[in-house]
Image (cartoon, rainbow, N blue to C red; front, side, top):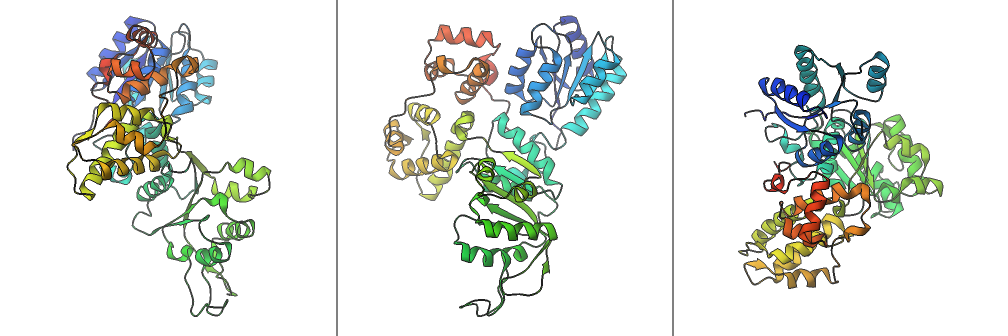
Length: 456
């Protein structure tokens, strides 16, 4: 399969430097996106998700290191190369200590530049970007998204899947924690071994120990034969402990011992059994608060949380709503043998604007209700209103959206509406003139969203 051309974002307030960088990188076969300042660069990152950023250190407004820090908070694996005309050893040391991939001084040598670019792309994006040419794309095929937030999360997940480190997934109910756990398993060397999932909050304490560790014949009334627990069943593979925050304290102690010793002892048995299991755990609870209140063991927390992932709520990635809703619609139309062409525009607007406290699971349920009840080719807004069972007030009025999130807010709206300014302005409760001024302030071009470049 043909490799997708790597995208490089160049950032410099000097147009001559941008032109020179563009010429040299394009000649080497790269796709180049230029930005004249850090604010424009952040907007371009949200739109096009480059594989590498090359930025000037000294710029008016936000400087290169502040830009790097902002990028690093949301996407720690995106490599950044820093260029400056005021280069010095202290600058280089400070930049590299903060995680900047490379450091070049103006006038830069083309050979050195291209060598650093090649290394950064090889090291920084091999697992981060899920491009269409990725032969291993199947590992995350069940996770449908075009959200940069989710793509960054998946990039981190794939990086950590290679190791055997325990992974802790935090997220609200219905965000897809088990889907992410399965994706990590499918991207790991254990992919051909079992993936076993258990909801720790759905099984009574008396039964949960036996389910996890197994039991010997005669261990308790009704134990008529030896029972192999889920640790043994998952041997060689992955055990997913969902809602681990609901696990009773006595079992937390036994789980900690099993993880420390890499061995389990079935209920009623006097001997231990060695296990080889990768642990992925998840919860919707705030375990920091649970530890403070004494409901969750601190030592177990640090054992399961070697690497942490935080799944964003659906309301935080509204650009995914139309994508998910249409995918569910197609699946459910097939299931119920109905010929449906999609949602009416007003119905989709309502879906995009809904609060979604139940996240993706709630969206799937709402779509299923509308599919079952629909008698027309397009699902009307009235069916969506009925399914939601409440008056949706719309997306948060723009005046109460904090200034620091204006750009992200606008990007989400334009992605959700595929660059439709009229619809986006209506959702933001602003007239077109005001909305265009906001777009200009953040240097966002609606045309760039017509064919969303973050979709694969």
